[in-house]
Length: 94
Image (cartoon, rainbow, N blue to C red):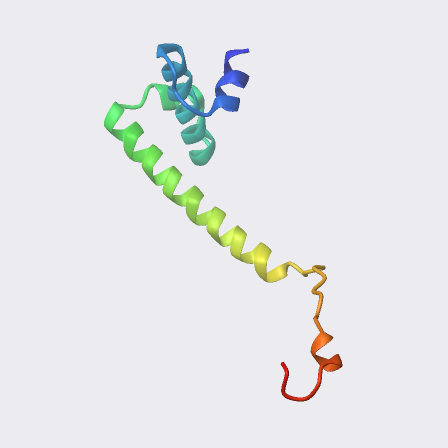
């Protein structure tokens, strides 16, 4: 399937991919503003680009805030090994 292949590669390789990229942007704008795909595809191009820019910026901001929350709520189960070998040495050798 072209869409799955495009999403796996995550880059535009040819004109088909460019069309899929445009569809992806239209889908993103539609989801962000909770409007139909038809409405998005029929927007004037300058409005579409501005809507896409705002949607991307706001998504990045939400992702950053979500990441900060995850870090603050996360508990670490990491084990830290401590080196006490200096206790076995003579005074002043460490």
